[in-house]
Image (cartoon, rainbow, N blue to C red; front, side, top):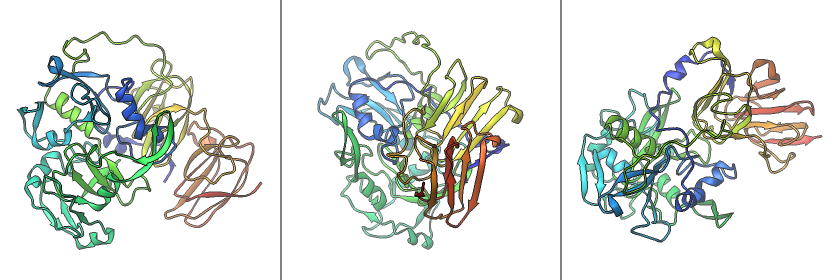
Length: 471
């Protein structure tokens, strides 16, 4: 439920994630084109579905050793979901001129790949494969290492097997209710693919190509993004924002896919944060040093000069006026319970939280010039709120936060119902303070709300679709 929080210490304990570095520009050329095809429609709110790369790059382009590449190194760039690799020295044609590495295979086996046939052996990664990074009970990549040798489920059988962090496999007949079955896809790894994942790997949707949006398959080859399955799919319980959720997890060569039945449409199947996990394993746990030099040089250029406070930024903690500019922003992704807070200082005390919120719907926040800091987790990318978020002010709209007069027209609106308790609030501003709530309501039944022309915004959660029934 969308709420205004006055304390959050327990939540913050669940958000300790070893991220790479701050958001960075995506390298122009093939990297940018590859990212834009599936993720630009998500970032621009044209479509609501899982990221395949992430809202931005997590590192600048890096030079990593690879024996067969010219000069012995190749250009890579890390994202939340994976790592892009410049493969143009071997394959000029799209999509294989940009590959996403066999990161999940390296994590699950401990074999750090430094060439086609050159590996550096380490222990399988003790990094959680899904959910919160500090979940003490969630399975890790090391958990799935032993599962690689387990036999395949017969084609068409319902997937009811479970696994815990210790790698113990069991079965739960209650899981038949999800009707997820094993599909034999003739993978050379001799594992099946869960039906929900196979449908996703072969799905179509809005993509960005040749300067415009069109409908096409998300992947020109179903195994391009994921590679072949390394294990069967298993149900498990993981913490997501400190809340236990039942998810289906399957490890592929390149990605980890998860299926969370309780997630909203478009986000039930998600790509795990393998890029983050791998960077943590390679550069934090194994202690290797990333190089931002050009391939073949190994040099590290000086950091770029600061061009002023950013107006587009990702999750993290920032100084207002130095790192980021004050202003009104909306975020790109709240599917995993976005948490944000405006700060009057960095001492970590509750008194320094000016306002905060946690929501699973896209939100709008005004950062004041008098704020000292701003902090967010799992919110995607923050960008200036200067474009309409709906196709028309009188068009039906779903959960989220909207401007009245620009996104939503004043008038009388009725929602379609609620699968949970519908919460709505009329707003006098987007600062997140209680004083800015003009009126609100919480109900599990249908609601009718009169939005006034003097309202600045409207926000709702678990309310279905709102339709205008009167001016």
